[in-house]
Length: 170
Figure 1: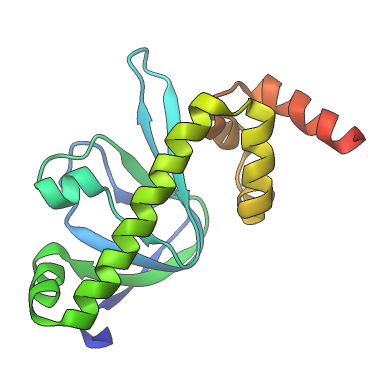
Figure 2: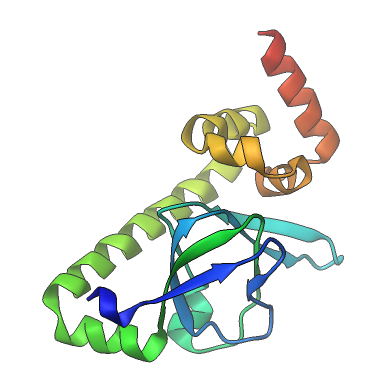
């Protein structure tokens, strides 16, 4: 199965996918951090997700519906991974039951994660969202610029600084 994937590397600042392009590749991220983002109606950049080592990276709507992406995916650090094209991935899903089950498990995990994030934006405070990110993905807190973390949490840089200061004094 590994023979169907090709090794790939991204330098910091390289794009995996740009808004307007169709997502044709499915990436297993072996090392590094990738950020997805888009622009809101006022032109402000909004971080939608972070992908770290062991994650799969793809823009689901574009990848599966074969439509242009609304998001950008950019390497925040040196990244390495394994990539497979849409057509080959589809072929493997249809021909290898183990591959299909693994893919299904990844999609379920991704869907649950997305649902939990959506709910957290509604039923958690910014402090709770930051604490959760700190507990579950400390590498993001250590390696990602605060302006991207603030955007991901739905708050301003100033609010994030205040939250971090308050948490440090507790």
